[in-house]
Length: 440
Ligand code: HSE
Image (cartoon, rainbow, N blue to C red; front, side):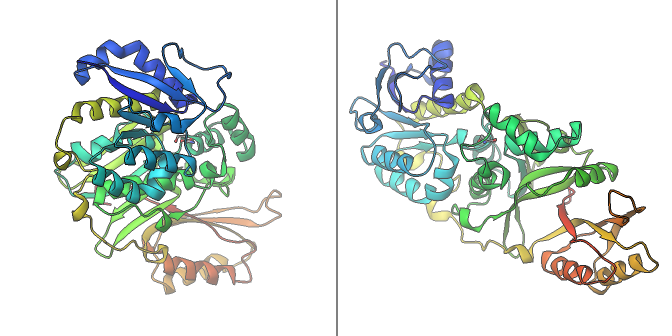
């Protein structure tokens, strides 16, 4: 049988990796797909630029529309990123009746609902395994492997740059800004690194995971997003002392009131496997009602790990080319007319435990005042440590506490009452804490 013809949009890190993987393993991939997969055309902004792959045998162009409008091409792989030009190209490819494979998390998180509706109408597939957690086949795992489960919650380290920064701060005592510079030099960070450190990249990925886990439309604008820029070495060290690690997590949880969608730094017990996922690695913990907790780990970025997911999608699409569009795996795991409009909970309604740190005057009764505020709001304390005044702290004592689970609204009230106490001399640092155990 003739090989299936693919057009690539973008020959950067992921595009180059895809060319390389297909060249190296083409024969084996054809044995899996039932026919060869051949890249016939590729677009790149600068054709003179040095590449990480051999583009011999591929027609090159600077015009990406030449690829999406090429009648020979059956599958377009969009690997340029962003949600401007990429969106136009993907919509054009769909309207031309081409199948699409994309690694673009921002595009799917923000415009996936319209893209899938258009694809449905045209009877074409849009595959996006590479959009979340790079090489980890987490989309396939949730959408197909866990289809017998009601997913209760998932929590993921889904931004490698953020995880690298937190790991270096903990292991080497390095400062945030210094590690970020290194992550940029190593090529992990997004073009705009605020996407990594402010949690936007993780929120894109969480939007997609929550949608396929719970059967809800993609709702990026409703994700609560907090980055890691305010995490200090001091908090990293106190967390370690208390038996926790600080990780930047994306968390989606189904509750009786609605669905939690949140990205924020989180203390997790150091004994959890996911707490030990370090450096640029990603991991996603998924709790299903039948299977219990499952953990998926691997490289979340990089040329060949991401290409691994792109090529897997090319194989999937190739295998399904001749199938009836009505009987394919639905884009968002659930049939499009069976998505629910379960409400997304505002952060005030979310229940979680907390780590609190504050500075206080070294005088009698301060701790009693703080604990009284918490008791009045029915907030139970799990652990408390007080550090003696030091010169570093301007002669102030540090109080560090862990609380039991409480609604965020009550915690906000507690923090503003604590900050109003005369003896408290700093803002209260608060970091959410999740046990991620079998029960919660
Ligand atoms: N900037 C992303 C990360 C790349 O650091 O995880 C992969 O999406």
